[in-house]
Image (cartoon, rainbow over all chains, first blue to last red; front, side, top):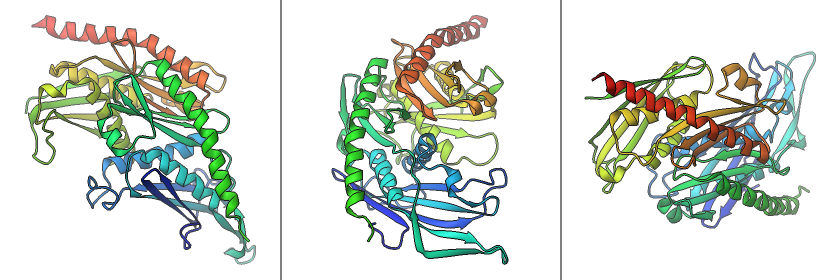
Length: 237
Length: 197
């Protein structure tokens, strides 16, 4: 991947918007009420270097809302089933820290973040971990690495709305500032809706919303082809 | 400062208290030159507001910004504070209803009213409106819509879980049908409030 020290990483450029995602895997004890589940912790950061509007300091509303959106997409699409991250029931499980950092903000953060996350997770190679029966300690075998089981491939498509008449796909920052609203549709390869995210903005009729969904499903196929091509081109030796 | 506290109760004992302050003088860092700056604060029942509350505040704020005629009050600040009193399911739509009633009660100029409806898609495919917490957990997908009163257009949409496109359209149609009852309730409440004096 792009980050050599991470377990999986990907850099995505959508026009000028540049987002990098790094996945670090660590070991932890699973929660008491879900002993067979691991954890996935996404975090979206909008540092002050990516755009003038973001000041340094605690994460702003946009970063927090984006983090929540990514967490929802992972949960809704079931792209990674938490049970797959469990190593030993009740004793040991993987925690995947997914850090998504925007390096250049030119609109359409959500689409780029979801792509970067998907590509980074496909790039992850986890070492084999076994629990030694006698000592009860975990043994990590760094020589034997397996990729993650990714069950679904959710892809986000964002639209900028102008007064219910005009819809622009993949808006730039300037288009987003002038728009009266935004819609983000996340679909998976079966054409199922993983998320319809319309955070306020000017009202849309049901028909217009359906139009957005149809275009999102078409775009899904194109993007999936691109991701598959890139992943195949970096097959490990 | 004068504020209009509004209590919103949704079916199933979910209740949210809304307080609206404004249009009042805005801090220089927050004021916008051509319209009012709207701010929403959502306080959970227990604990400090976290990432989920921030995400919901963004949804509520942008929904309110779409209906409030902010251009009539430039360089002012409108603050909407929502306190969750009890959560028995359909919390987001309860917050939306509380927000709209607070805007109505405060007498702010609006282009349309809006109401929140939550639809739960059960595992067998039936659609349930305004689910309880238990029904939300068992559901395959939960869709929350904010529907505007003019032409029943969709102001806000958010989904949890996955569903097919047809199911989403069915939920939207069901939500649009349900808005009649809610808007009638708004009218009755306002009528009751102002007929006393």
